[in-house]
Image 1 (cartoon, rainbow, N blue to C red):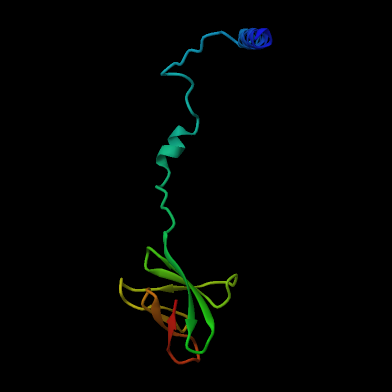
Image 2: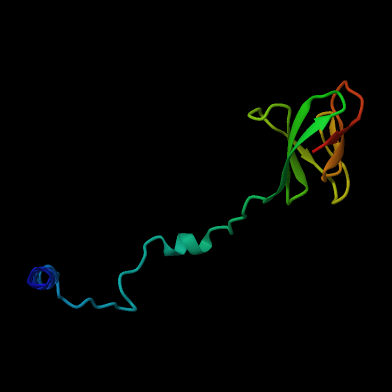
Length: 128
């Protein structure tokens, strides 16, 4: 019991010594303190637009047994890849519900089943 009491006393004294070593000067915050030299440039800067959100990211297996990776974005675009780590082809839909197209590629739909046409290949159904 005395050991616990001594340890508790030592802990309290150690903590108080630690806190006594802190800087006890009060801080003053001034509303009209130093001015930011870049404030005018920052206020005049053009608004920042955020990149589109990924709404779906799916892997499709097509009728010819190949895999296709498509990331659908919130701004009517899609990234089409034939390899998981490959370079994407950016496809754009002119309006929601219309096929995503670019460079001879066409993707109709954005759900679990899509129709994909690639350059030099016939359109085929692909399932997620």
